[in-house]
Amino acid sequence: MENSQQYLDPKVLARLEGLQLRARLIVEGYVSGVHRSPYQGFSIEFAEHREYAPGDDLRYVDWKVFGRTDKIYLKQFEEETNQVSNVLLDTSESMRYQSAGAPMSKLEYAQCAAAALCYLILQQQDSAGLVTFDREIRALVRASSNPSHLKQLLHVLEESVPERKTDTGPIFHDLAERFKKRGIVVILSDLFDDVDSMMAGLKHFRHRRHDVILFHVLDPAELDFRFQPVTLFRGMEQLPDVLVEPRALRNAYLREFDRFVSRLKKGCRMHRIDYVQMRTDQSLELALTSYLSSRMTRVRG
Image 1 (cartoon, rainbow, N blue to C red):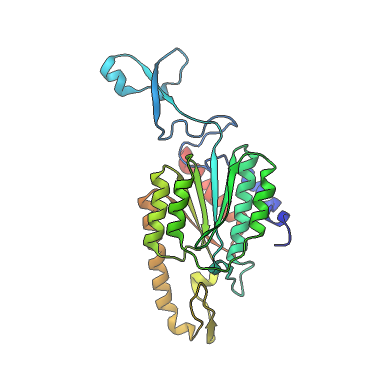
Image 2: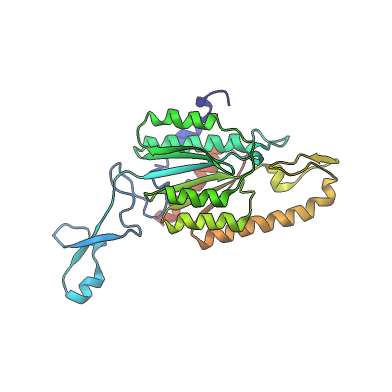
């Protein structure tokens, strides 16, 4: 990427702003309005009760208490008006991959998506943080709602270099402990790692009551394996190079890949994590707006 502005494609941002991307990125409990807490009414602990007063919102009546006492009490929530969203970007070597027909590498595509989301979060006066990682945390920018924070976020994105092996499980466990305030964790990765270890880390985020959105970034060649002549596959993340006849491997590869994705989807469903597959030959505008609009439809429906 030549400069930060390439990440902020006006076509992408214009469409996304129309979807009112608030701090929770359209998770359960989505509400509009700049200063209303997005946690209100969404699986939040309450600290105490107060008696009902005319004009109070009946949605927050504790009917169990009413059943015991015949008195109407409202749940009092411990909430803050500023929502925190942390964007996690995989910068491992496999993210460097770009097939002949793809317009950009997986990392470039994920960088664009990360930048657009951070931009919109800050536009909504909420806090955006950023983590880049492979087998270690390479950069950690703590969340802030200051509009000038975008410059630092984009700088970190631009400096990301994919050159090492990944190890998502321990990274996710580490970050789950670091993120003290509940919020949204957005992950952009090709997810080429041990599924069990990765799922254990994702489960840790959910145990800490974060909402998790998993964007699975893939090159079209990884999805359809349309290689024709004998091909030298360059090993990444410490794997050796291999010279093979692709047509002889295609069916076996697709079966194994389908099994891999099925395990990811099953784990995400089990832990109530949003799984979203992204192709690097797909319009980023379409990829993001399709997910966000469908999420809003589910919430409002």
